Length: 155
Length: 145
Image (tube, rainbow over all chains, first blue to last red; front, side, top):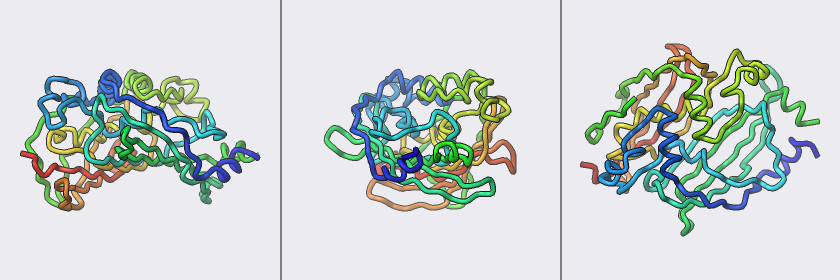
């Protein structure tokens, strides 16, 4: 079975959950890298006085967490294009110090004709849950497999 | 860029969000983002790798472009949060590019948590050169002062 066929056959497969801790240093470095040193991201004192009672993480931060590997799923080193990203939260932003169980799921693989040839689309979902099993966030990413890469993977 | 803190927001549907011009994208920023995100794909940091992939130079991580769109809402985080954010990438961002981010209020809805505002947002290099578009749901807590 080639990589493309394997993706098709694995739609619905998930990884084993991985425990992640939302770390203060990681959030600070992320906030600095994106050019948003909001006191709620980086200033412990200011954050403690806020409604959150402590530091929070920027909305797109969860993409940096560990979600585990889906057994048997290949992911090419190069050639994939990130097409779309979505994240939605339950209740409040991620809090520094929060423990989150994360896992990922191959939600879909489909193909569409384009001017340049057949494009592949991989839809990955990523989930974050509290240790009590409450959903904290859901992410959805669409990666595009270019016609050239699709040819390599499909043979 | 320092997020200026604002009073609890009350937007009108149709209202434009004040656009922001971001500092030019630098290679150092891409290196920092690679480290902070764990995305070490070399097309974002090393010229030869980018050129080998057919690009004219290193390109910004798509997730970095999205993260900077969050700056539109950063000043209001004391009163609410980005409940959902969805975006599509429509162009490559290169070192030296100056991006402008902005958006418009498209709806408002009362929820149990508070008032949920819907926005269309964009990041662009120029009037007709959009690199990402998306939708944001920003929730202002019901008890926000």
